[in-house]
Image (cartoon, rainbow, N blue to C red):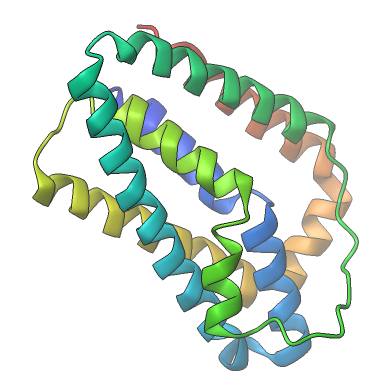
Length: 194
């Protein structure tokens, strides 16, 4: 049985903390408005869903061929979470870039997922450490992919909708926010070995 507290903490941090998806969503909403930026977020949803489906297939194949891979994948997942905690702790508020190219399209959101190492590693780490060791059903794996993609969509929409509020709050209190997020990530990493 997976540790649901660690799983939920990790998923919420990964989906609501600043990253390429959330920052781009906030930036698009500030330039084009929430309604005109929603297709970018829909593109993120489908891109994340595809990556989670591929991560499920990849992880299932690894577990089938190499049953002892769970401890290795737990170590890889924990290492990534510790690295992410360090990056979160030392990060500073991002300045908003103003690209000249339109970035609020469905295709931009979709394709961003395939070059976004955060989402790729997040998908592999989440599926291989929290899901595949406990669930093997195609229906369950697909359900997790949809739910996790939807949580990503909710996270980017929140950043789009409340971007300016988050930006001001994070800029003012970013150090406290970073410490709390980093400590939650360390908790998630440690709980993988319980």
